[in-house]
Length: 206
Image: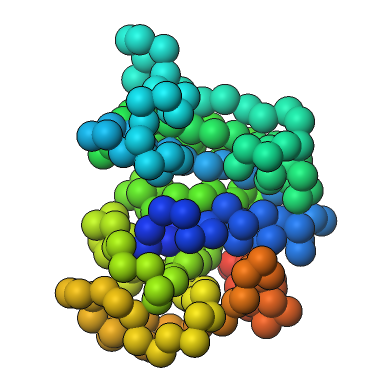
């Protein structure tokens, strides 16, 4: 099974949501994968990519590392939550297809995979795609808007705000989809966990 967790901006809790889902469903023995795109002075991992460690060795098209110890890094947090394996894939912005074969190999070797990324949707069709939204965060990544209509459900940070601060994002993109309110640091409610479990079970039965 393939579960993708995306979000409309950086630093709104995507890793916490993915880790929370892993923790709730440890029995699935997840392989976790975080995808970071770097370049143009920004990356999905840090506000600036000058010293964040995203770039691969000179001449390499991308970089993939496996985390072996639970820790404070995003991939380490996935292991701490109960993932069986955890990877961090880094590619230049807009160049994810460079790592397409490697991504396909990871998915083929894993019974259940959870991927933190929006852009992965250009290469795969997941069994379930959750998008995290924070109406109090004005930033909205172009890649998020591109794939927003493919979300199966939206996980919304509850800040007591009924309308988002975004311009140019139609409400119709999310009004007719299931929405689950969360209150950080609790990112997975029983209702959300039940929804994910049911969706994955349905996908397995197909």
